Amino acid sequence: MAADAALLARVQPDRAVWRWYAWDQPTVSFGRHEAVRDRFSAASLSRAGLEAVRRPTGGRALLHAETLTYSVVLPLPASVSWREAYTAVNGVLAEALRAVGLPVTLAPPRTERITDGAVCFDAPDEGELLLGGRKLVGSAVWRQGAGYLQHGSLLLRDRQELLASATDLPLPPAPAAASLSDVLPARELPITIDRLKAAMVDRLARWVLWPGHATERDLDHAQVSVLEPDAELRAAMDRQALHFGSGEWLWRR
Image 1 (tube, rainbow, N blue to C red):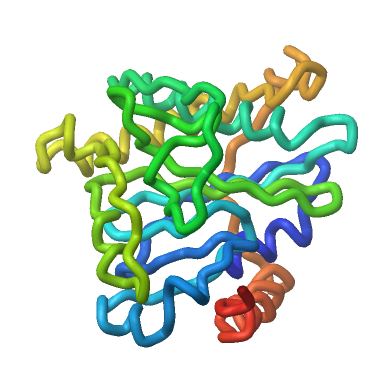
Image 2: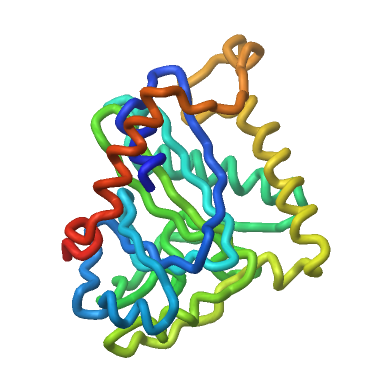
């Protein structure tokens, strides 16, 4: 979370940053403005053996256990809505997943209101990625000044039911989500993840976020490279880590 927030704070007009990462231990992430103090507590999380963090993005509670998480930081002109950026990011991820043989679709607009106490994978929001009609990737966003941050988690195995053991109040039963283990043998998971990352590099090299963002000539010179954190970025990450590691931020609502 600290790295994503630091990248957002120093977003650059000509650069988008896409990150993949996993989690050292099962961790619940809460949405930026999500009210959780009536459902979760330090004691309930400890009993379940889970860590917790609050994201800089919105959305609802999500368990990161056997998941692959992505984040995208990109410049967002005032003339472009966050929904356009969201659609573009989900579109390029969907292309990459289809390229490795996963026939994902985009969720249609919701017709019913999300209930209080719901968690991220209980139902898909508009534009999220589905596999076989079930939610495969949960995503959340935050717009800050001239920058845009989007988080998402791809389920390798559906472990979201563990959230029920980490609450002080009962959670409504959630339908099963989709996961890569549903459609892939365990031995193929690492191979597919490597292929997915390679497919992402290919698509990012010719990524047009929205009409007018890039010309064909620009795309001829597009570059995809590994970002090595410099001293300034590392210092910014350290400062953000103090913020995201504080109980005041975690239990703000």
